Length: 514
Image (tube, rainbow, N blue to C red; front, side, top):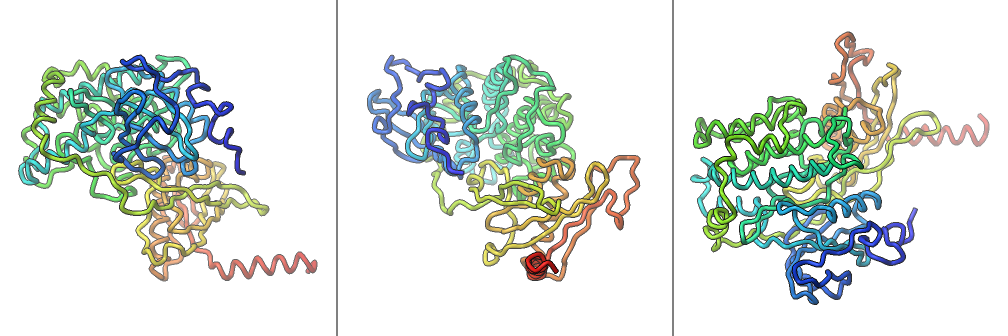
C-alpha cells in the first residue's frame, strides 16, 4: 500500500519533523535558528555513503556556518515513521560534549535531511587509515595508536556512553567509523541511525528493558544481539566498546577478514576475542600492557551481566593515562595534517537484500514472501543481512526451498520459500524465521550456514538436493534423532517444474471437480 506523503514521511500539515516531536531547531552560538528549507543549504562533498543515506558537508547560507547533513532516502529506508520519530527524539534530546549535536531535520522530496554539527577531522576510522599509511604497514603491524592516545579517545567515548545509558538509550553501533573528532580534539559519538530508547522512564537500566531487533555491524556486534533469544540491553554497547579498543590498537576489528556469516559463527562459537585474535606472529602486540588488556577482557564477557557499566569502566586504572583534547590535537591531527582524509564515494550500485514476511498459506504451510529492499552500507556499514557468494551470472535465478523442522510442540513444520541471490540473503531469511518464532534464536546461525551451503550447491549445479544438520537449541534431556528430525532440521530443494505441474494439476482437478 502506498501511503500519502503526509503519513509516510511523518509530516504534520507540511511542518518539519521537529514540530511534531516538540523539539525546536537548535539556535547555536549565533542565536540564529537553523533553517528548515533546502534552499538555505549548499551541499558540498559527500563524507559518507550508505545504502539508504548519504552524509554531506554543507554550508548553512543564512548562518554562514558549515554543518553535516545526513540525507536519508525514505523510499529505501526500512525504518518506520514511528522509529524515525524516536531517532529524531533521541538526537534532539542529546546535549552532551561527547555526542554529536543535532540542529534540525526536515523533509525534502523523498528524503529526510538531518542537520548536525560537522566534525571536520573525520572519524577515528579515517584517522587509523591515515596513521597506517603514514607509519607504513610494517611499523603499524605492531600497533597503530599508543596506549595514551587510546586511553584519551576511549575515555571520551565512555563519557558519551555513560550519558546515553543513563538517559535510557542504546547506541547499538559503536565502532571507529562512528567516533568523530574535531580540529580542537573534541571526540564525539555519531550515527544515531540505529539508536533506540530502552524505556520511557529515563534512568531505568534494568535487564527487563531489552531490545529484540537485529541491528549493528557483525565484527562489533555482541553475542546476545546475534542470538536474538532473550533480547539485549545497554551492555551490548560495552561489548562493542571492547571491540573498538582492539580496533584502535591493531587498526582493525577481530574477524574483519571473514564474511559476515563467518563472523557471526566465530563470535558465537569461539572464546571472546582479544588483541592476539588479530595477531599474525607471536608477541606482535607486546607493547600493550595489562591494564589495557584488562579493559578489553572485562568488556568482552559473553555473559552481559558480567560486563562493567560505562561508569564503572571510567574508574579503571587504564584511563588514568588519558590526556586532554590538546594532546589529541598533537597526536592525531597535527601529525597527520599532510595526509588527506580517505575519500567516500560509491563505486558499486547498492545490492538487494532479503526482506519480507513469513505467512501461512491456504494449506497451512509457512511460506516466505520476499520484498525488495536495499542492502548494507559500504565497508564498515551496517550488515543486518549479509550476502551469499553466488556467482553473478546466477544472481537472478530463483531457487525453491523447504525447511523441515519441529516446532515447540515437537510437530514437523514444512516452511516453503523462494530464494533469489540478487534479492535475498541467507541470514536475512534465518532472521525472519526467528522473528516469526518458527525456529529458536539459538539456531539462527546454523540455519543460515546450511541454507548457504544448499544455495551455493544449487547455483553450482551440484547434485546435492538437501542438507540435514544438528540444531543448537536441543535441550539436555532430549535424545537427538537425525532420521526423525528430533534435534535436527533439513533444508531441501523443491523441483520448481514439478511443483508447477502439481499446482496446475490441482487447479485442473478443482475446476473440473475431479
